[in-house]
Image (cartoon, rainbow, N blue to C red):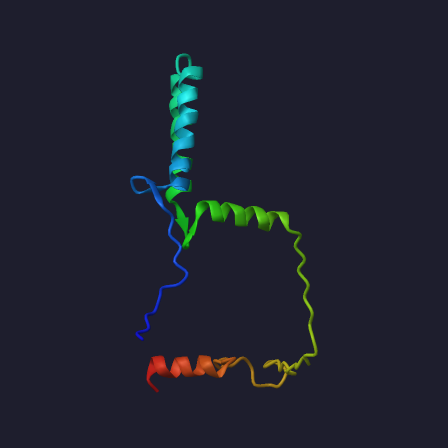
Length: 139
């Protein structure tokens, strides 16, 4: 008997209105209905205010319907932000069982040992920095 592989974990929403799913149609349609009500409520007296509110509402609806941030939709992002803000946060730092190693360095004043001021040698703090200088200068 022949065996066939069947695809798994296919998540696909049905298209309701053209290329829009039900959620996307709702995100775009609800601001349109609000704008329709606002047209009769304030457009006669405050047309510029109506235009600004209509642009803001439809912009928000389009962002909710089609906007993504790093592969996540805007509604998911808003829910994640709200959950993050609602949860208590506690940051605890524990040192653990690490031993601290200190390097003892002594300062020698060049004026006290009679040599006078001399050119200071270029001292590298790490081997990586030395290696970087050698590679850059090709020594």
